[in-house]
Length: 77
Image 1: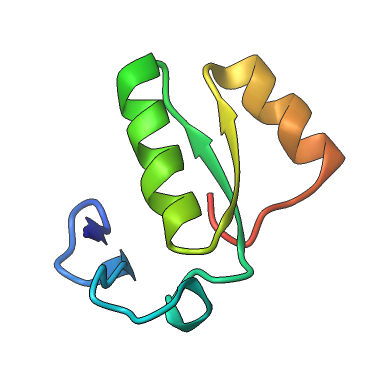
Image 2: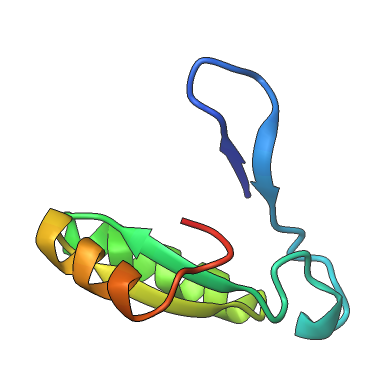
């Protein structure tokens, strides 16, 4: 999966599902905050990122995202 930069063609994050283990994934050990108001999309992003070894938190709106950021700043937002 490739998450592109808006307005650019450089990927922010590339997840290779062919990795032999989560420890080899590019996000293994990273903390990620997913901010998404669509519950299905948020759940999908959480599952994919966790399967790749990331520590994932999900915020469904602006206020909960700010509250989560106040607790701990993630490696990836």
